[in-house]
Image (cartoon, rainbow, N blue to C red; front, side):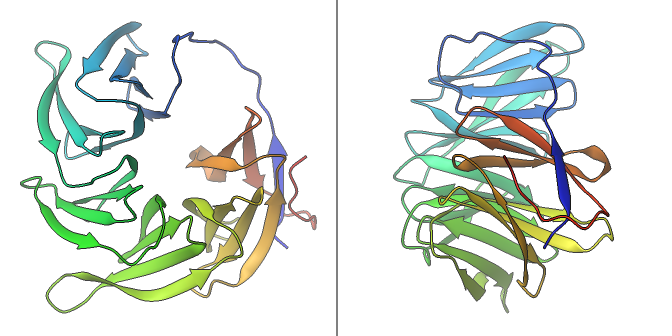
Length: 264
């Protein structure tokens, strides 16, 4: 079993937004929050904030790549803003259309933007011209999470699978391996253990976080939660964070002590 210990840090401040938070990311000095019909951007160095208008409905996903901020929205579009240092403002740069249902996950890697949607598809966008260059339709339910690992794209879905995609001749992505779970898969995150070995964290809707060695997919252990673990983020110094349906964010680090992973 994987040896992991957890801690829960104290909350140091609260921002009351008055609306449901769809997603949160931190990039440089910016804290960026997806909300219904807008993105709020706080500059933590200057203590100033601004609202980025344009989204229709909830903003479910945010990611930064190629000097652009991308937002996946409820109406199926992906909006992009570019920060203008001269005016200290984000300016809308593009709107990427193609998905027919909400965009719930975004990931940037290999000069590509990858988007996953409730329409069961993954779209691959060029960061050079923001055009869709491929649509992947192998999943049979909502695509919940996307990550890149080495030369591979990993995707997970409520269809109980994790799929590994690799480029074939001509550059298009095809499924090279499908890992099956007993339950829907909510989130993926790639980390390294205390010995710098690659590990895939895989959150399922049976309230577990499963740990797999890569590339073998040998199970390392499980973390048990009281509700679904909906978000996993990597932190500095080998730690990672999990956020679950109880409203708790837990901080995890690899331990050399012989103990099984568990979340209470």
